[in-house]
Image (cartoon, rainbow, N blue to C red; front, side, top):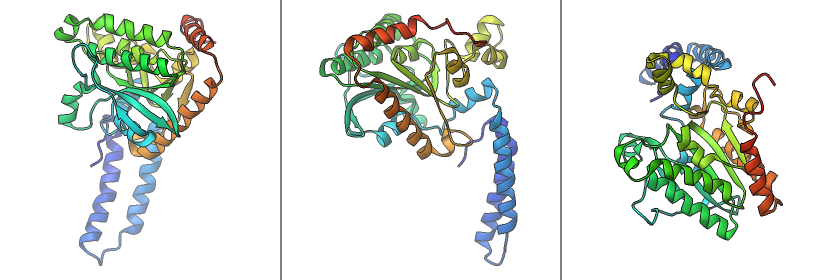
Amino acid sequence: MTHYLDFEKPLAEIEGKAEELRRMARDNEEMDVAAEAAALDRKAETLLKDLYAKLTPWRKCQVARHPDRPHCKDYVEALFTEFTPLAGDRGFADDHAVMGGLARLDDRPVVVIGHEKGNDTSSRITRNFGMARPEGYRKAMRLMEMADKFGLPVVTLIDTPGAYPGKGAEERGQSEAIARSTEKCLQIGVPLVSVVIGEGGSGGAVAFATANRVAMLEHAVYSVISPEGCASILWKDSDKMREAAEALRLTAQDLYQLGVCDRVIPEPLGGAHRDSEASIAAVRSAISGLLGDLDGMSREDLIHARRDKFLNMGSKGLAA
């Protein structure tokens, strides 16, 4: 069953009518509704193009959060072979919001790390909706240290509303864990490529995305705070999230213009959730290309280039 977003309701009506016609035809073989259904399909495709031609930042947030959008686990299963998950931070516990391990990408050994939100009620609760606790960031640090030791490139997949803000997480040093994970990203002497596949929320995303190359899917978002959180702080009204989304400049297109994002990966018409295979293939191509850009760079050059990239952020404005 297709999940439609609020702004897609007119599309839901048209596609629903087309499916209803086909269902009636299946129940009654004497009915010939092929022409009517095809006309509705064409109308739906035109409307879909119109809806996605100029998405507002808030609508992009909605698309980035779509429950049917491919998640980290989907990308790992489709892109990587011989994936061997590694668990635990060797200090407290295993955080199921963060998955990672050893794998091969096009027969190239890599370490892959990512946020996993889950795809149904049970898995979302288990994965804590992709909101990592301190042990998740410490697990990621352990994996990055291993990658550095054995000279393996690191690929991170970002999809989180932000780090988990619960009391237990704060007691176990959430902010310190995020800071040290960000620091570890800057220290490792191997290629580090990050892809924002959905939401890139606050320090919870930066802790994995302080990379040599950062790519974003076309309708992904990446910001210092959620639009709802920003609206609550600035206007004391979370219903102002549309205005906040505009002000935050959180879209892939804005961030590419600002120099935060290095590549925007096109999505199928209607978003990644409408054609997961095509989206995953596009991400594969982007990761391979970005890793190829870093081939041949020395350990020192990788570290210096990564540090310079983030030190120079903010020097490029939207008017440039």
